[in-house]
Image 1 (cartoon, rainbow, N blue to C red):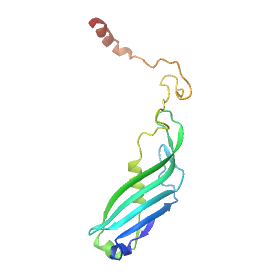
Image 2 (image 1 turned 90 degrees about the vertical axis):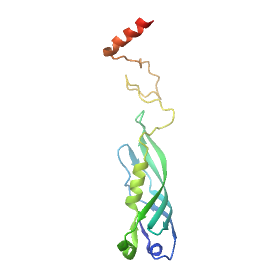
Image 3 (image 1 turned 180 degrees about the horizontal axis):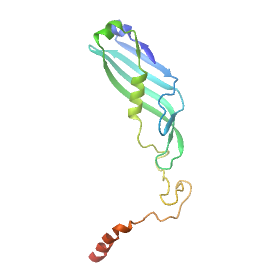
Image 4 (image 1 turned 60 degrees about the vertical axis):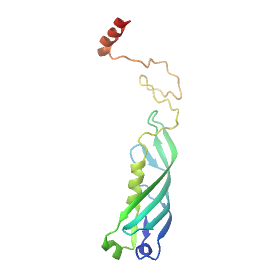
Length: 159
């Protein structure tokens, strides 16, 4: 996504409004898939040393639940502010600025590391592997490591 920053650099404008759409699928990765174009809204402001970006991005993504591994679709809406210092060469030469990498990096940094299909997701049974959201399994969830049985003997002695 390229924007024309010539008016900002030459002082003809102090703020440039941004309302654009990125059609490319470039944020898909491990555990998530971009399902809609990324909407970008916000502004770029001129400062004495460079530019300040205040942007909000919104996209529909398909993710995998961290507990039950089911796929689900959610809206990913992220905001960020970024400062960019311009060199003298950029100030004198630049007309177009590509924001694709800046937007992509900020989205990827802010992606949640643990995604849930719903807040009360029960996940998978560690014994039988069934989805606890769909089936009440009767597996015993407390399994003791036999190497720690000596510790249980100590508890029995205290009683």
